[in-house]
Length: 113
Image (cartoon, rainbow, N blue to C red; front, side):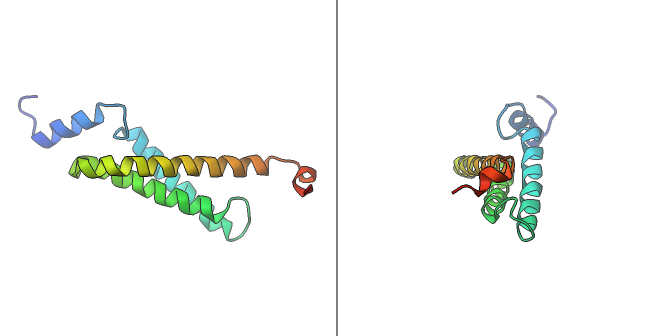
């Protein structure tokens, strides 16, 4: 790695591991953030997805983006953010999955107490 600036060496080492530093993970976080914003905006008009899923997604995906940036600036902060955004992603996936499961139920099943 002779001749490369130190920032390129560090950035290259960060991107070479299959962890949250991969570009695919970054794109997934951006997509999740967009989906969460759309879910939150649509929850005001319909009850397809609750507001909780939208808020959890927004907070979780912003924490993920902050984690991604902090790996480059301050790695100790990234180590603290990783479990937080991991738990928020898990909660978001459960909320979205549950809502999709409920949307897939026939109307007669939904009305039973």
